[in-house]
Length: 176
Image (cartoon, rainbow, N blue to C red):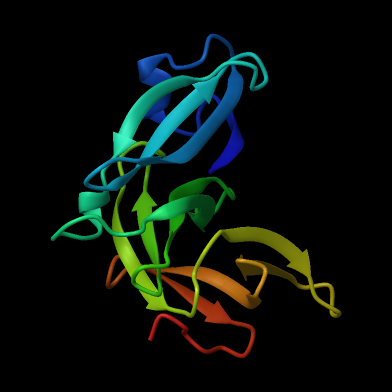
């Protein structure tokens, strides 16, 4: 799973639901392994992670139908910002070792998610995302896949298709 610091104003849905007693807290996502599916669960903490409250379910059915598939290891990242550098669209990666895919979801509010694309890769387990600077001091996204391989590039939101793409450092769209 993954967690991030949430600040009031990042999501009107979360703010209106009063999930946090103050101006900030921890917002987390983890995989619930059920008999029929591996759904993602949204959790929050107001005490720096000592205790957590389950808040919402993101069903696996957003991605697949026809039985349980591997859909785990959620990773959250900003994928689109406005002119004031405020995140307007969030992305989520989900590992699917059973399908040799990394699935992506998108959200405007960190609560309601929809399908946003996928790409094939060998052994897509434990996808993690971070920012790094290259030798030219350009910030890039590093996507590590189960410590066996990695991709360097950027997540890009395509407004025309409503999909998230990962464009590698050489300009190749790996989602194709």
